[in-house]
Image (tube, rainbow, N blue to C red; front, side):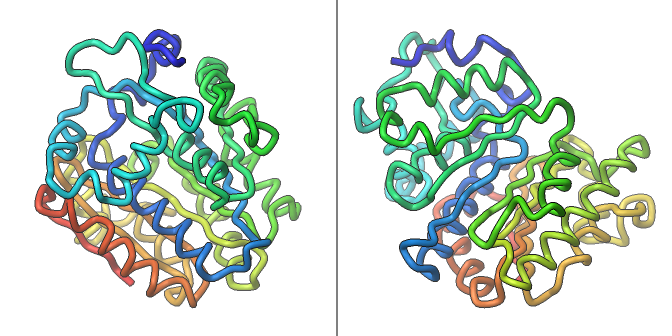
Length: 312
């Protein structure tokens, strides 16, 4: 059984943000993508998921967004609500309850746990979690050592990028390490604003271009990039609805999104208190069904959002 201490051995910013509105829509959208890909592929071609910023996979959350969302009538029946329940189902079918939680704390399954659960359920062939933080990797290893993952443990890989994961994943992508069944998820933090993040934005330009080209040729199943501006709402609104932050930074948000072939691009934008955006690069035949699926799967939480938009 996992304990509270197991999950808090390596404190990080992820703990504070776990279960916020960014996570709730992002994870709902990840699940929608997985189901749409499965519906449009043969059983033998289940996706291989790669998380370039893997995170801890399970978190101790006190975030008010998660608390509020769980109180909505339609949360238990939502795609995300059902997936969370499956992750924490009684062992050995799930992780079971997290012991030692304090009042007001909630166990929250991040994308690592949700995607590992998808491997158990036969919706994905494998999961690779890439992270440079040894403390984070140790926690993921602890989670994946639980009995519910015993039959798929060989399909759950934890990889050390030994530094920023983007150059490593880009090198592998350009080298042909990822094939037609791979799904790449990128979850960087607020890299589209600061001048000292220029090199990171350049790498994302190359990652997005390469992913877009390979999806178009059928050499990659899909890719996504999650954007956050942190507390800089002004920058977010300029990027999302204006002329671009500081007039549009080189390889900034608008430039990166416009790099993608419009026939393969979906952009999800939302705000509860902070602004977020999620870029999907998907095959042409998946684009419209995925947009509709995200719209439907997020309908339960939309009343809490200041704004929510899917650009197809």
